View 1 (spheres, rainbow, N blue to C red):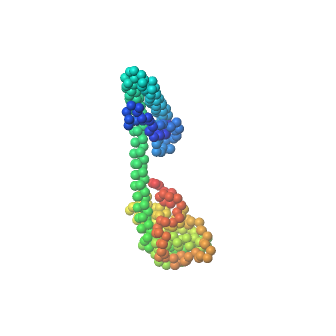
View 2 (view 1 turned 135 degrees about the horizontal axis):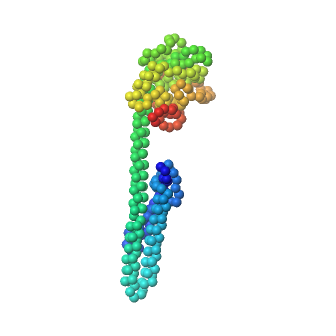
View 3 (view 1 turned 45 degrees about the horizontal axis):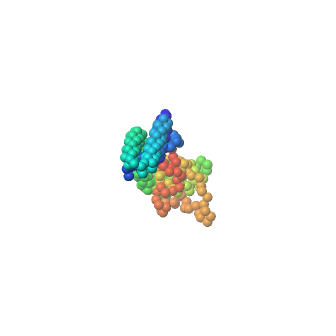
Length: 300
């Protein structure tokens, strides 16, 4: 917003009353530094440069009045405490002190109340944002669980078509009619999402990196996810169910070198019904946080 700055407000400062024990005359420390509205944090409010200067001036005037009233009272006490009429003179000074501090408090009250109003609004706004974030996080985690439940279905298969550099792997579903040509190298039985990922990674190590998802399979998946996700897509689902970070479901991640003495695992033709001993879906090495694990999509 034009002309708005961040006003840093410290804690309450003040002075105890010199005539009424337990009474305090308080004011807010207003910092001379300011920043953009994006840097709002605890102990800060939004305002204008003019307001910041007014609040600082009001605080200084309040302090100066209190200090002057206190010095005057103590000076009279010292001077008149052993002189005739000293008690009466001191009582007049005490009354003068009360009146001056009350006037100063009333003069400062509008500034103090406005600062407190804005601090309270900011605290309420922070609580509202935190509640919104927690609600979003719960909804996100619930969607992730639902995605992983869909991924646990053993309905997926793959088939390699072509040879050499023209080879590609087609991903299809056994429970959906498909145009994938029969024969050729393919998975032996239905796989869940984790098993499918392992097979695709193994094929990529062998040089088959072109991945094509059967359109009917994609449509069936999106229809399932639409029951709980307002923005269903293959990209989002694949990000939720895979161990590795995939830039897209059509692009295998870069191959990591195998440790010495360890084989690359079973061939994709026989890799199925693997155990998920690493804690189930969603615990892989996806980069970054947030919904989608790096994929770009609308709505979030």
